[in-house]
Length: 409
Image (cartoon, rainbow, N blue to C red; front, side):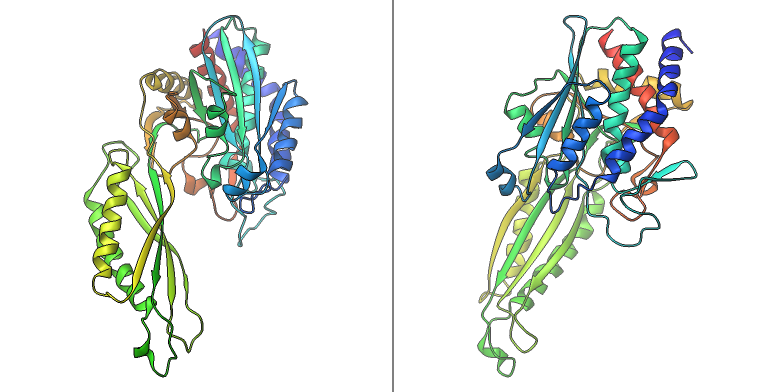
């Protein structure tokens, strides 16, 4: 272990109880999205950072814009630390909004219970822990007295579960931050430089209602929608033949996640709406994917000429692909993670989508790295008993500090 690594390790270890306490405080404050009333959690996060010596900027997103994105309140945070003079500005992004806890928990979703070295709670792994990972990594660099040049910014945002349009994208669009590089929250056992994109479409099939005693006088929207569903599921089988060249990504996926419609049991349905989720691998073009899906839907509707279909785009999140400069980030985090964890940590992609794409869309090279177990499944992310191994939090904090030191040396 080098002298720098030894110093950073000792500093992180000495402050670790306080770091765990910060994570617990963030878990104990609900920030479910939906409904997306997240300003309170942003204020709790700001105060936790301020209690540890950070000056925190609070940027309240205009109410009309918040509501247009399906939320109630949203405040973004920026906490800056300047080292030396010149050098790169590196943004470290974590999001504080979480999916609702749902059923099946064996622990209080807002209790931050520690059991066998794991902390349990909604958002503990995705991604409330990384506010602490990044904050205590920065504090360790300061205490270590490492001669560095550059600016480190913690970006706290609260709309990842709603698409990130009023979080990272808004901060960048408003010119509130102009980073040269960025790092986004993730897990500890891989550096991520690519991930899937996502397309959400709403398919509305309209017919004509009629009494169930004389259904032939109406146009059955559900029958037509069933034709669309059959065509979509048949099409889905073809996606397995496409496999991304990026390790960890796999094939494109498609899910019909919501169906609603009908008036009553004894009435021919006049309208049925479907919501579908199409995950896109980095090699795919979003516009071509959407056009293909629309073609499948319109083709199925030809068998039901009396019905009408409307297809609305709800969300388009483009895939994340490496930008020039992201290799420098990947190598710094990969090398330091391999040292700290004592095993080879690789660079790969993820089959989900994140706020990282907003930085890449703005031309900012970005990778994902943070505290967490080996997989989303092991973390119970987005399901009951979400959990974080505290030893991974400790080690990831050391990795982040050392990688940042390399990048700002």
